[in-house]
Image (cartoon, rainbow over all chains, first blue to last red; front, side, top):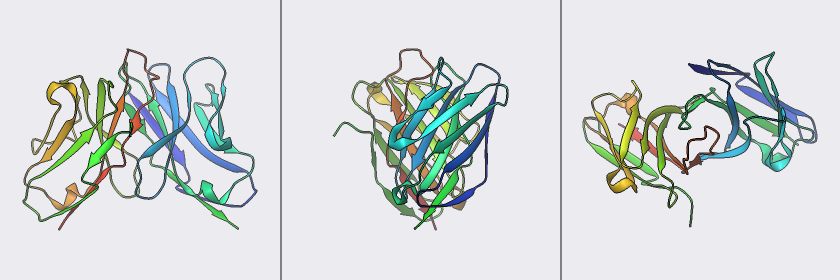
Length: 113
Length: 116
């Protein structure tokens, strides 16, 4: 079975500041991990994913995440926040052969001028 | 447009009525998923199709819910005798398939259901 815990339902940063969104997972099989972003009344857009290989994964819009097996974590970071980054972010794990996703409860990111 | 399309975008219905949502996946994607998202929560898996075969259903999918994917193309999700607890965003996603777990799922914009 798989589960995802996102620490912090709301994160607020100033424009230009570091963004850090935390995600811890549990998986009975080697995990495939994903970060999705959702803007109001929209579907989900993939930011980045980890499958195998390099543990530091780069995604769109300047985001990156590092897979740490020993800590069962997959935290999302961005060096400098932009106003357009304000959205809800979901971490997800895939543990089946057909791509079924288990999502965390989401983190709302607010960016202040 | 090559994205996942869902219709309608919004649906308001009275308790006890039946509703049906449609999802048109990306062309040639043989995997199709339905998720439900309630306010303040992440999406929860409902069901999965491989072509026209429904291969997994969540326990969240009560007997009032039924999903179909005739001919392996578009899919419909029907809710009978709607209840206020059914109010949520219903998301559809598709992926190319092929056996790898890492295949990206592409999401539609969702259908927001409000039961009054």
